[in-house]
Length: 223
Image 1 (cartoon, rainbow, N blue to C red):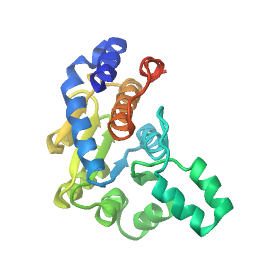
Image 2: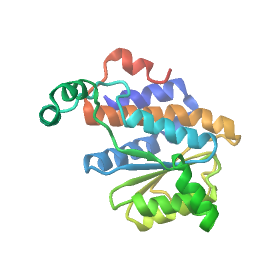
Image 3: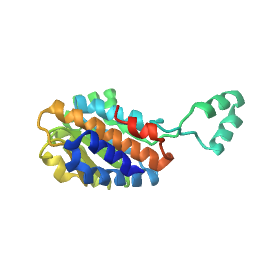
Image 4: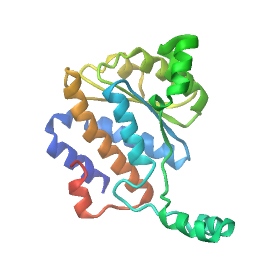
């Protein structure tokens, strides 16, 4: 079933054919991470920072599939407070733990002011990252220094590194366990193609963890 998502992606965006194998490898890394109760740490700059937040939004709540919490947790919630527990039981959704490192403005500006702004993401990787987690570094050039520093710390922490980048891949591609490279040079063109790639990854991971999407969802996922 997951192959359907990649085939649909390539059908709609033929320019991504060269990245098909890397997308499959990245899916494998993410699936293993979440199955082992790890987390995904994501960072980017500018539009790529917005992409990092977008990915978190697709993983930390239902994307296209229902993610009802299990009966054991429902019972615990209702045992603590019956009425509020019922509401929580009906509305909470299972989450895939993901953190956009660019979201922490107080920490990042404090570290920038007190230490070195290029290392803000590296500091968060040091604090959050553990063996078995994954770092997704988004850089259209593949040479963003703050992303490279973060990737180095991630590797030192025993994490897997996925690069989402542009033509050539830059230094980040060489450092990553898998690099998804979009064969475009201009920043906005690279970013236009990054979105359907990470939507595809989020869909495949969600299906792997929570079930199968229906046919309508399969054909609509990139809209």
